[in-house]
Length: 373
Image (cartoon, rainbow, N blue to C red; front, side, top):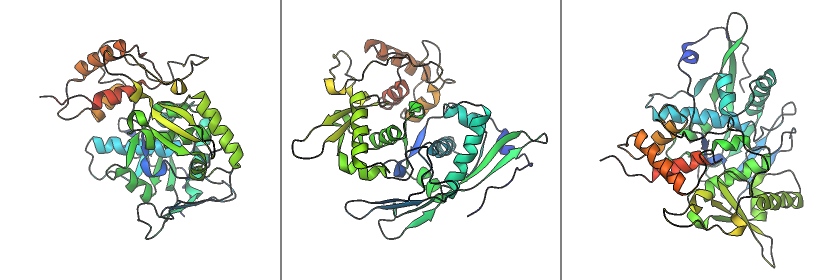
């Protein structure tokens, strides 16, 4: 395994190109439902061993004694890199690089983290865990062979002559890189994902996004024991079940509603339904089952931690511009007209412009528009 290189004083041009901001966030699909990451911040050295019930899919994850297994919080770096790769692809870049030049400040802002000194140290620790974690899996091989890799092959810091860190170079594992760029390899996720504090809740969001994202009002139901196996959790089943039931009762998952399905003779299940699927057609009254209603938050969300759809004006240079360009069918209609129509849409349904899932609602709205004639 290639070890992290020392500071690189050769400031290369790729770190001085205009940085990509307001990225539409993308997650690699294959990693979203299997136990690839530790769900807690504490160091985990116990391996993750998973085999699907039909025996066709296996995941084996190990970490070294110094750093432990990469966590679901470290995954944020990979999500950021996947989003950058997809933005290059959307822009038609030829030969998209496997090694990315990253400005840590931009990455931290995108991941909705502070930009103090401690966060930069945290990034270095996360990169060490991503590089030292070893994954073996037969996903994408139809069970014929295993791929063995670490999430990143190498990383290095780029510093200026005064010793100030100007950027990082991160070389992604080819398995991850190929998975992002293959057709259907990523799914859009709500930027509010980065505001989720609990690791189990973050994992549950990713499961809901993969399975319930396209299932309409019926959603997706999964039994508690199956959910437990897919999580790779170190906690005993009873503790995991307690956490899942608590999350379902609180029903605070961004973009997805949760419902507990009780069974008299077996373990309960959880149903996940995309909230946008519960938004009624124009002129209809919204009807949401009581079990799927989201409780009112006790504290108002900070407008600095999530996007708010602009009350007027063009959206081309706002966070919603890239979302529209990604979701609108081609040939695309004028973004100003789309913005005005969306304002009328949310006003008619009394959806706040700063709703926590407003970006997802806007993306769905755009995907349902007709192409320009």
